[in-house]
Structures are given as structure tokens and as C-alpha cells.
Length: 313
Image (cartoon, rainbow, N blue to C red):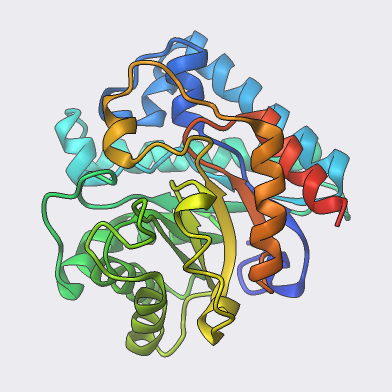
């Protein structure tokens, strides 16, 4: 595995991710995604073409801007819990993981350059609803829950794993412990509400510090995703040490709350140029911000503006 023990973003390489894959597929491409499961798009030719076009656009931006590209597998909803609700067996879900990694190996072979290293990132999502979690796993339950997908990623050739839109400290700890068990680098990306706190009520500083304490700092770094910068700028403005552990951001295009986004029937894609400028502000506050991308409502326009704004610093 090319970057298993030497992830380029940990050596100071500027990296980007993609944007809001699910919202692009639903609102831009008109593809139905039950349970917001992006991998369901790969069941039709139209869906495969849309996903391929989407990642080709992102890969081109990475190469054009001289950034590395962290390729997030479309497996946010591919756990046995969520996949089971879609009628899929564990064997079928593992095959989805295998196919996702194989497609990214091909993408890397097609686009990667020495200036733009491509990293395969195995994505896992929260046990509950990322917008309105109805329950919270214990640390032990979370480690068991995430271990299956993390093991698949380790076995099938991912370079790293990330928990995206994580809503509680216990699930963050469980993800890192599951990754430790199979020796694969891990990232925890917390989401926050409009008050800058996790849906579980915990603060970002509390969350990062607690996961580090429980795992002896084993996470490669932390991220924030599925929130607009306005929702957490105050939280990251105090210069505290925990901010050095935040290495990535995938913000929403919209300022709407999670509850409002959940009810929305039309896409709020915000203002790409304004979002780029807000990333500049965030970058001034996070000294180790090497990974940038987008979340709900963002597409290639937002990613271009984010890269352009950061390159102009």
C-alpha cells in the first residue's frame, strides 16, 4: 500500500478531498440515494457515469493546483447496519468496498503525479443519523461496530480510514481503536451544530482531547465536516494547543442547520467564492490545515474557489 505508513499530508503536502458527492448525485444528477447511500448510484450505468465524471473533475483540480488528492470511498453508509436496511449482506457490502478501492487504484494510475500524490481513504459514517443521532454507542460498542469496515479497508488496500460526520466522542474513540488493531492510519472528522458543539453536546476541544487521551494520540489528525465555517469559527479562535491536531476541513456550502438541511427540498449551494474566502480565515486559525474539501452542497466550483483562495495567501 503506497502511503500506508507515510501519508503525504503528514509530511506537509497540501491535499484536497472531493465535495458533497451525495448532494451532487441527488440534486444535480437526479439520482435517488436511499438512506443517502452514495454507493447505490453505482448500480446503474447513469450512476456510474455520474460518479466517474465527478471524481475525474476532482482529480483534474488536484493536478491543476498541485495538490494531492484524498479519494474518499463512497462507503459512508456501507456498514452492516445501514447496508442491512438496504437488504445487503456483509459479503455484498465487502464487495462494494473492494470495487470502490479498485476504481480508485485506476484513478490514481490515470492522474497521479509526483506533485499530486493520490491517497485512498476508506470512509465510515456514524452509527446513527449524522444530522440527528438517536442514540450513542459506548466506546466498546463503537469499536466493534467500526471494526468490520476498517478490517475490510485494511485487507483490500486502502491507505487510511476516516470516520466522517462523527457525532460523539465515544464513536471517535471506537474508530481509532479499530484502526489501531489492524495498523492502519485513522482520522476522525467531527460534525458540529450551529453552536459549534457536537450533536452529542460536547465541544470540539473536549472531543479532540478526549479521543487523544483514550488512544494515546493514535489518530493521524482530526477534521471538521458537515458544518458551515460560521458555525465553528468562534470555537477555533482561541489559539489553544488542540487546534494543532485539526488537519482537515470539509465544510458545508450552506449556513442552514442540520435540521433545516434535513427538511430542504432544494439544494442550498451557497456562494462558492465566499466559501473560499472563509477557508482562508479558517487556515489562519488552524496551523496544520493541510486537507481541504467540501461537504453538503459543494461541488467542483467550491473546491476550485477554496484552492484558489488558499493559494493566494
